[in-house]
Image 1 (tube, rainbow, N blue to C red):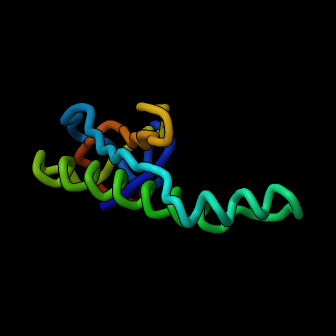
Image 2: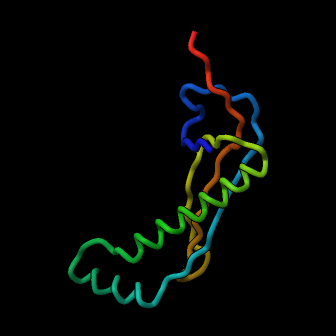
Length: 109
């Protein structure tokens, strides 16, 4: 599956637009991560626990979006975007979305 954040795929032609696809996940903070984050706020530095949480969340949301695209018969997703929002105190949603398309490789002339 080709995944890009542009409207087109270089070297390919879009032959069919199948529609918007999306994937999301809602994650809550972890007490252990919160304690470590509080300590890092004192001394500074990366909040590794939160970085890992966001990385895992992006992967999960992206995979859910790709599964939906595959069900539509897509071989590419264009215009991929990520968004986040607070759901409740201590929990946030990570949302991935794009347009499922069918593409064919352009032949050299």
